[in-house]
Image (cartoon, rainbow, N blue to C red; front, top):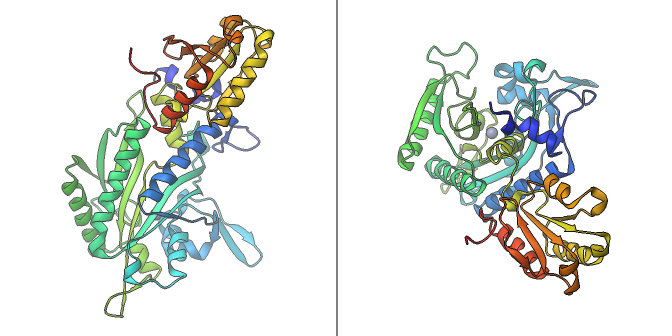
Length: 414
Ligand SMILES: [Zn+2]
């Protein structure tokens, strides 16, 4: 692939994330600028979910071995799990998915049909024991933070919920500038897959029929591919591609009859009797690791204003302009704009401008600019345009407005 867009190289160059052999392979840590991108992305997704009627929970990254025996992970997925830890007479496991925890949270309270669909979301940690040979960057990791949710609903509601999840995915992709290359209906292997999947042909048949209904009704073109299903059910995968054209799954939507059976979930229907809910599993942006890796490559490190770690860099030409430069810095931060100041101690003006080539806005404050109280500043945009002298207050308000609106454009077209 074109190395210029490799997220591992850009991640190092931009100080976004890194790894240390002592922390371990596949266990990246996030540096302050990368942490900002992740934080903004996480807040975006939580807000979109709240708006769509989801409520968020937190659950622990560990669970007892029995939990995964019930969910079926132990029988069908243990190759991808970390070995269990002995804890007194018990064994605990780093979780390979959030589903079992959410099933238990649902089960902990009784539910009436009036509460359904109940949409439970969490941005939570999970672990996968990938082989060390394949680890790297943010795309092959052992610690994963998943944007996950489970909708507990009646059978009649499942198709609408899955379709609404696809809409939420499409909206997020539009806001983030992510392009789906195709939708895939992931089915089990034709031959049964020898222990790879839970065996219940009737449940598989029903889940596949419903997912086809979801896709056909949405008018989204898709391909059915055998051998890509989860062990407990079929899924819709939304595929993305890196600049070299390599495909990966970012988002998923599943309709699941298996976990509600295994955990004996129910709700009280209008008839006063117990009924089995359906679980719709869905992830809008997948793991934050893969999502940020994709965003880095997609934008070549030049994040849209609302995601940029630093939105405005303030550059006093000489020490004499430090006072007005600091005034502008504080004004920007008060308005919620992520601003930094790089003074002459960081080198010549040209060197400072070049070092910040991916920062969307730079405000140069020279002798002339400093004379007028509080600005104006000579504005330079990342794309090379120079809109000229703009009063400090106006510049900050513009950036704040563009960021809040998630506008893709840096400035009005000339
Ligand atoms: Zn799930």
